[in-house]
Image (cartoon, rainbow, N blue to C red; front, side):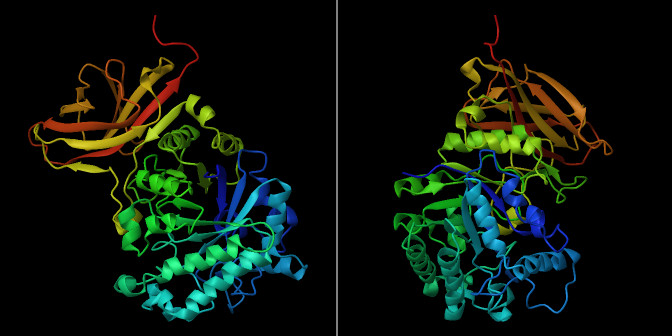
Length: 482
C-alpha cells in the first residue's frame, strides 16, 4: 500500500547555504529541519547536488566549491566556506542534517540530480554537446553517489531527480540516443533500487521526480509507466522545475493510476508562487494559504498519497507553518476556505511543451468563437456549508463597453451579479470581473468556463486577453439560506 507522506524540500542553496556567513553555527546548520519541526511534515528531502558539485563532504564526487580558485558570487563563496567550516570541525554537513531530522522524528531522503556530475569532463554533458549517460563513466559516477548516500550515510532513501532538465540540469540522453540507449535509464534505476532497498539494516526508499504528463516524460526518454510496472521506484513526484507557479490541476491522473496499480505512491510538488517576474508589470508573489489549500484539496481529491512542499516564504513564519500543519490532513483541508487559481504558462512550460490554460488571447470580437478555460475544484457547492462563491476573471485590454458572454458548464452567467475593479495599482489597462455565483454553481471536479467577446465599441482595435481565472470558496459552520 502506498505510504502517506507530508514532505518539505530544501535545495541546500536559496534558503540555506547561500544565506549564512561562515563559520557556520550549528543553529544555522539545523535551520532547514528546525523550521518545519512540529508541523505536519514527517519527511525532509534535501537536494544534495547541482551541476558543479555536491553540498556535503562527498568521497564519491566533488564537494561544491572545492575545485574552484575563486567565486564570482558572494553567495557561492558563503556556501563553500559554510560547508568547509563544518568539515574542519569534524562534522559532516549532510549527517548534521540527517541526525537533526531523525531527532525531530522525520524521515530524511537525499535528492540527486541525474544530469549533474561535477567530477566528469564538462563536454560530456548533453547540455554542452556531449552524450551524457552514453558514457559509462558518467553512469558509474552517479551510481557511486547513490551508493554513498544509501550506504555511508543514515538516510532513509534516495530520490532521483529526472525532472530538473532543462531549467536546472542537463538531460540524461540526447533525443537521438533514446532508441539505442534508452535501456540505460531503467537499468540504472534497477541497480540503484537494489542498492537502496537491499542495503544492510533497514531498507531505504527510492523515489523519482518526473514530469506531469506521460508525453513529456517520453520526450525525455523516460518510460515512467514501465518503471512503475516493474517496481523500480517506490514513489513519483511530478513537477515542472523552474515553473514555480502554483498549479492546482496538473494532469497527473495517468500517473496516479499507473502508480497505484504498482503499489507506488504519488506526491505532487506544490509550487510556491502566485505571480513571478515573467509576467509584465508583476513581481514575485507567494501563494497565500488559501491558494495552497485549494491545490492540496484538489490533489487529495484526485487520489494522491501525500503532499510535497518547497520554497515557501523564508524564514518560515506562522502562516507557512500553519499551512505545513494542514498538508497531511485531508479533512482539515476540505473544511478550510480556498482560493483556486488556474495555472498560467511560463517560459519553462513552453520549453517543455506543457500546455497550460492561460493566458488566452481574443484577437477580435466574434460571438461565435468561445474561449474555454478548464478548472478543477475539490469542494462540493451543493453541500450547504459554502457561504460564498466568487468567480474572478482578469481580462486584459477590456473596457466596460465591451460585450461578453460568460458560461459556466454551459449555463449563462448573465443573471449573476458582477463587480468590476482595476487589476493593477499603477497600470489601468486591465479589469477584474468578480462574478458572485448564486444561481449558477460550479460542480465538484472538472468545470469549464467559456468566454466570448461578442462586440467591441467602434475604433477599438486592441486585443482582449483572458489573463487569470480564479474561484474563491468560503465555508461556514451553518447551512446557507432559510
